[in-house]
Amino acid sequence: MSTVTPFVPPPIAPPKPISLKRRWKKVTRKLRELGSIGSALASTGHPYMAHIVPMRRCNLACTYCNEFDDVSDPVPIDEMLRRIDHLGRLGTSVITISGGEPLLHPDLDKVIARIRKTGAIAGMITNGYLLMPDRIERLNKAGLDHMQISIDNVMPDDVSKKSLKVLDAKLRMLAEHADFHVNINSVVGGGIADPNDALKVSERALALGFSSTIGIIHDGSGQLKPLGEAERAVWDRVRNLTRRSYSRFNHFQEAIANGKPNDWRCRAGGRYVYICEFGLVHYCSQQRGYPGVPLAEYKTADVKREFLTEKSCAPNCTISCVHQVSYIDHWRAPQKTFVSPNAGGHGAAEAELVQIR
Image (cartoon, rainbow, N blue to C red; front, side, top):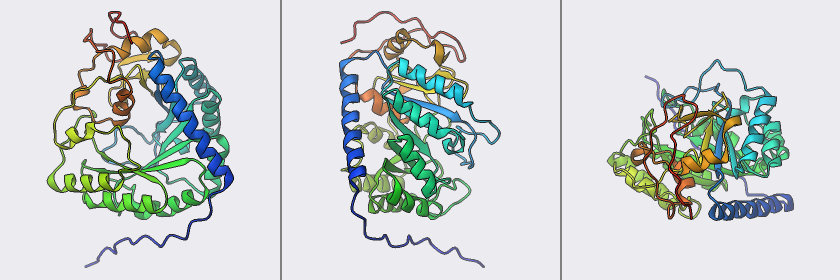
């Protein structure tokens, strides 16, 4: 009978002095982030964050994920650049590349550089498998600001291959070479076998000098799945461990962990937009088809309309990026229920004009 040897992360070498270049990039990134928040507080007529998909194909197949396939071609670079320019036209503050696996796109560096050219903050969500020192240096040169890697377990299993054992060498490469901010997101729920893995992942991330967050895996429609007792205990421990680096805008997860709905104003389609590989604007990755308008046709009037439109899926939503972006405007502009947009339709509900503070 064979036994599985537990993974023990290798010791971390003493940190090298932080270079002046890396310090300067960190300072200027913080200033740009503060500027983007100030702009968002001053005006509601532009998206704060957009997720854009240049590549639906992924090199992994995690069982809980519905955001990938294994056949799609990359979006042609000229089309990707046009889409980035349209997000710039709308005044988008943060553009995050997701997938699929974005590192599979052959012209990803050009996409990142174009994001920076619009004045937006450039982010990326990746599984990290394709990272090597030379690839990290290329991301530095392209101007990447933020990278997030989700690590689901310590040892790979049938649910997810995004494991600490596989990715630890990649994390050490990032610690040595990355000029951009790195966040490691651990998870509980969604069939993850051992919730204690989230604590081990978070401890390793902090030891390497990264920020660390923890999320609750949603179901296939982005709706909540209450945590069990063991999952809740680990979730509390990780949140306490990462309190300084953890986002200050995750109060909504307390209700999710308890299986309770949230009372909030979802600003998807306005403050947050999701652009699929076909160039259509959606509320989020789990509500594709709403409003389903080509990005090239999306106007400031659409942003303002969706800002004011109440979403029926909001109470049980677990999509943290939408919650966090919407939190900027939680204090203003109550939403109203309008005629719901049809999936795949062009032109969402007509919204009554409401004065926005």
